[in-house]
Amino acid sequence: MSQQFQHDVLVIGSGAAGLSLALNLPSHLRIAVLSKGDLANGSTFWAQGGVAAVLDDTDTVQSHVEDTLNAGGGLCHEDAVRFTVEHSREAIEWLIEQGVPFTRDEHHGVDDGGFEFHLTREGGHSHRRIIHAADATGAAIFTTLLAQARQRPNIELLEQRVAVDLITERRLGLPGERCLGAYVLNRNSGEVDTFGARFTVLATGGAAKVYLYTSNPDGACGDGIAMAWRAGCRVANLEFNQFHPTCLYHPQAKSFLITEALRGEGALLRLPNGERFMPRFDPREELAPRDIVARAIDHEMKRLGVDCVYLDITHKPADFIKSHFPTVYERCLTFGIDITRQPIPVVPAAHYTCGGVVVDDRGHTDVPGLYAIGETSFTGLHGANRMASNSLLECFVYGRAAAADIRAHLEQINMPSALPCWDASQVTDSDEDVIIAHNWDELRRFMWDYVGIVRTSKRLQRAEHRVRLLLDEIDEFYSNYKVSRDLIELRNLAQVAELMIRSAMQRKESRGLHYTLDYPGMLPEAKDTILSPV
Image (cartoon, rainbow, N blue to C red; front, side, top):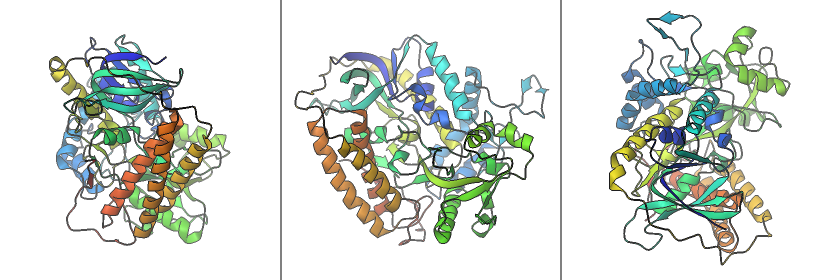
């Protein structure tokens, strides 16, 4: 039997962005935080590198802003970059207050009553400004924020809840456009429940599972982007999908990322014969921005017909490697690779969705009452290429900003009245789930082949043709059968894939992460690709 729930704030997504927002809201509000699997299944938990912020006396806000603008291929919104960087220190101080165990600098003791934290450097940054917890920063942050949320009786953490669609006044045939909550599949009961809320927040992460090879966990299906699009929100710059240059290449190593911090500490990329190749592609060599490094690796793999290249840090002392990169060391060891003595086989993999749902500096979408934060959103921070470790920072800065905006408007918004239940009267149980599995596989393969690191107009046209056929098939299936997590994710993934393809076809140039052989040059004027559902 389906159920009705009412909360002041409904947060769809339980990662860095969603938990930060929930913890910055007043304790008298009833808050639901939904996770479509176990709470730790999102991307935050697996983030290794750290959080970029201006923390050192030798660093400046202006320097961090300029580095971000340089990495972004002329498409960053300078106001969004400045807003994010100016709020970086207070976001880190808030995380430290919550108890996040960032790594301290062994060369500093107590200094003027406070401890110094170790800062590392990553590609595109001109300073050491990445605060981290060894090489498992995401796990440290997530575990800390989750523990804080569990201590707050007003925050309800609900696992195995898959949002199906947003409920808007327009969807219900009412005057107005406001978001009133969401329909949510309870995987424990198999029923679709109705969640009414004064404010609804999309914090569902990115869409990298649209690609065959990805560093992301299984849930990164673009759910928030697809739901927002169907609810009437604009999306922007979805052609910019960041491929992390170094994912572990091993048949049993599903989605294991080799942190960029290894290159920050001197690791070198080599061909199978041991030869370095990055100096041929960029004067910054291994510390060039990710798009350049990923394209260089892709080029060398195609040129030589090899399955991978190698990341080599064996010239560093073994104790240094083990203390700085314990997670990478231990994980590689389970696959028989001792990184103190052997180079690591690596390939590029889809990593980060730079585009998303259009929002302002408080996380507002085009639909009143609906916010989008974190990787789901498009703030203008990342431009045509996200700079390393700015993504977690965006989660905290915009999560806190959206929470402040909700606090400011609490008195103006009433709880929505009872909403209609999900209608499952016209659907049956499916005995054709093989269709879902087949479509899922087909989608991810043609996106990898046709809309990957290097594109052409012909490849994009082929992808567009195939995704339209898939969307029709999925729509028919969705109309006739009961929803499941697999079907919901496939529906969302196909919708976001179509938006990515449309965005890529509109960009008649190569810029940042969008590289096409048909338009290898960059246009003189940088413009966002904005798609509108109406």
